[in-house]
Amino acid sequence: MPDIIHDVLGIGFGPSNLALAIAVEEHNTQLPEDQRLNALFLERQPRFGWHRGMLIDDATMQVSFLKDLVTMRNPTSDFSFLCYLREQGRLVDFLNQKTLFPLRVEFHDYFEWAAARVAHLVDYSSEVVSVEPVRDESGEVAYLDVTCRDPAAGPSSTVTHRARNISVAVGLEPHLPPGTDLSDRVWHNSQLIPRVAELNASGAPVRRVVVLGAGQSAAEAVDYLHRTFPEAEVCAVFAKYGYTPADDSPFANRIFDPEAVDVYFDSPSEVKQSLFDYHRSTNYSVVDMDLIEALYATSYREKVQGRERLRFLNVSRIRDVSVQDDRLDISVEFLPTGEHQILESDILVHATGYRSQDIGDLLGESAKICLRDDGDAVRVGRDHRVEVAPEVTAGIYLQGGTEHTHGLASTLLSTTAIRAGEIRGSLLARLAAD
Image (cartoon, rainbow, N blue to C red; front, side):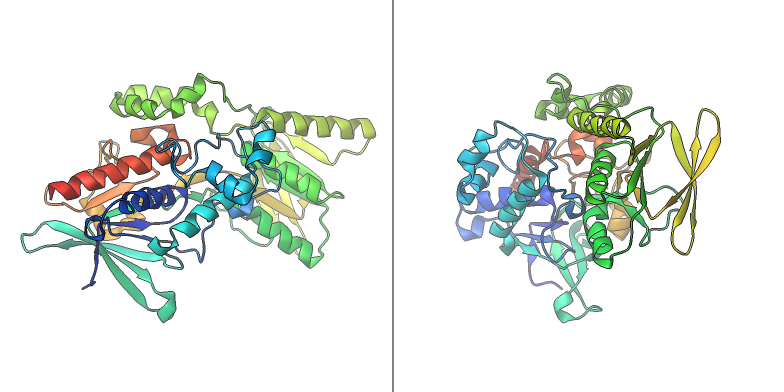
């Protein structure tokens, strides 16, 4: 039996649980030790990392820096992006840029800076392998036992932590077309930067690269590869006629307001679906207009110069990928006519997005205590706590994977700070009631 019972144990330590760790830390620093929340966060990576594979040097954030880990919840917090800039000596320099959107590498550095300040709450290199419900003397499921691999004791050793509540924030996993096998020549864009570094180190020639996808990551990958391999042809393949601009207009962005979560949560299912469909263009399969225009300008300039390295195969799909000894033969179909062409390529990049991980796979036995709706989706309360069977007092909080209940912002940074505060408030209220 574990010696310590944690009030909350976080599974995964990306921005969502980092924001919760900060909210817990700010709460605890105001109280004597016996009144503090006992929290621990488990992360399978050896250190903090957030989409490292797409930290392209000139890529910028798509949300305002004010939607950082704390500001929307607590504007006076010293964990804010502005406090990070002040500590780095770049506050005035950043303000002189007159932008709301920092470089992605800089915002990642901000996350690392914040994570280092709450490192005492985190066990890195801890991969969760099971979550088991634990019943007390009365038969209630009062605790959850979270078992993870313990690297300090060897790869086959495990350690078990007991908690009254868990916060699941394992992020999204790469989505790939059925039958896709990743290899040295077939990548998902989440590994773009390290894969390109390996390719450059090998000295292998790169004559043609194909990128599948029509969203922001796909367009960024096309632009990055075109710049990185100045002798290679880069082909973008997508089923649309062209990239669709992201709708970041002021009224559309209100779908990410904290109040919009209340509206969405309380709406009938058909209204939820309508809101989701209406506002997909704020986030899904869309590209920043500046990048669209830059790619078009590059393509046009190459046409003028008579050497077209940047090609757009629109209204098209990849139908087959054949692996040869020294290349890939990629069959691309032009959908209006059914005509096929074979692209002899060195690399295929799947910029095909991400999907939420199945909570059943992660929670195992504990998934059986979670209630589901008529569509077999997990039922989640407004406080982000999963609705559970009557005999369960242990809490399971979800950070992500709740678009069906909390709307488009549930997997984005826009409401991360607010959600962390809501979960902290729910935890405190339930612990006080006990």
